[in-house]
Image (cartoon, rainbow, N blue to C red; front, side, top):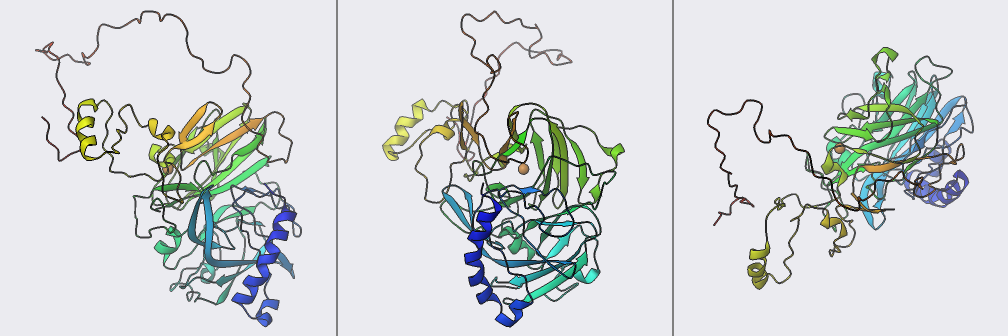
Length: 470
Ligand SMILES: [Cu+2]
């Protein structure tokens, strides 16, 4: 993680070039300088330099957009443009986004703030921005064709409204939406309450990220935009495990995690080791009477959820989508299940024809994580990630909440793997196994058939389909 000073210094050099390329010098004077980010790291929270105070959020593998105050109005400048996003070390994607990254920067304001957002279009086609969940004048809602003219390439539009409702929001185009969202155009928005709010508790750490998905063939750089369901990269903020940073918190911190779903399927998000409450949606904070403890919450398409918990158990706690295919990276989907199939007899025949033939998945797919298979450039293994005890065998929508007693308040640094106290790790049993106690009812069912035969049924495995057995 870098500090704010570093990233502003780094962004400064790029800013000039963008400004010159996008708008004239005269027009520029009226616009706040666009701030760009070229790195995919989780940036330190951006403490408000002007306007009313609040406790800033931390964007997972992202950053918050600085603003300038102009006669009491908070002015932001978003630049819609092609970007290169590192999705994981060794894997870069050519996406579209805002201000150098996909997703775009998080926008943070305070309830009651008047906000003016300049949107410059540097894409090869027109765009618009819809401010998902906000109360605003209809003409500021950002639906191309319906509430405004689309923003043509090279043009800058201005959106202006008062952030009336505190809560968790997002922004995304409402013009050629399928293409532009498949390419990564989206961002997070948080409106902080203007004072103590009966339904919004102060927290020690407040994290945000978007659930998104891409279809990029192994070795390719650009997403396939026509894909509707069969995506192969399931991402938190356009990052895949092991490229997603951990949530680093101090023991007993009250933690809030806000997430929004801009994929085309639902994601049951699961936290290990703690129970949480869903304290808000994109409709605002939830009434207290509707809150109950859970360890998984489903985030449906186009929804936002904010969860809260007290991180009172030290350790490295998995945090992931519970759809097991969403914790995998790019893979071929047409792989037959080979578990339990004895390949020994056929392997010899096949290797006569295909010398490099390799038997996969005979004992499950875990071998895939360790196999040093040749991969094309610019991709990552299907399941990977080295933990302190071996491969984590994960990908996609997976990260870790690291709860540490010695994490300093306000410090978001990753301090490495948890050191488990002696005697608290699952261990291998050495010595003789006790005889298993069994019930006598195996296979009987709740209502045994009248004339059940004792004969074993033989099952033949015939896969892949299209092949006939012998
Ligand atoms: Cu999922």
